Image 1 (cartoon, rainbow, N blue to C red):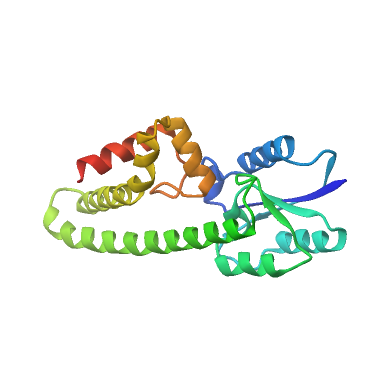
Image 2: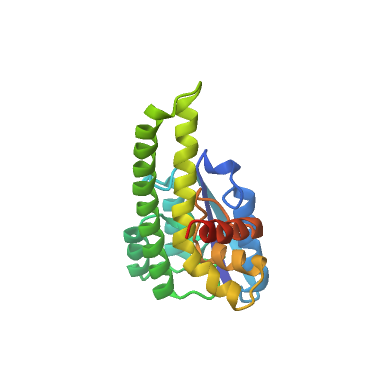
Length: 221
């Protein structure tokens, strides 16, 4: 019988975000078990950490991995970044022959594909961080000339718009071909969410966001 150990992780900030909360992770894990797991299967334990993905000390994940090594069970997570946001940690787990893991949102992905997804996601987060700092610095400089009662608010709005415009231009290269191929907005947002690519605010895609991104990219070209 196939055995699974499920692991969920959420930070205090992420608990309120759509697609990142514990209930959403549990739902995705259950969808995988119902649709892709070999029958019969058994979930022998579930572990949950409530802390940042940047924190290397995750006691519940350590317990989950130890149990997998002892029992031969497969570690199952909802999304790859719930396991780790660092590609080096993903690679280390892949090299451990006593550990097998599956990602519910990417049920057919093999280790090579998961490694590529992790590397791309890490690069994306680094770029977003650098872009945010640059946009805020530019907005702060412009804020000195904005005037008005609330220049700081205006500066943040300018920064947010510039960040959204830049992000739209970057991801439209992925969205536009799917749209031209006849994919619906729902199909496109499902593909983006499954790939692990977040929105400009590091959230989950919706059809409306896909539409706005296409419109924003067109208006800024």
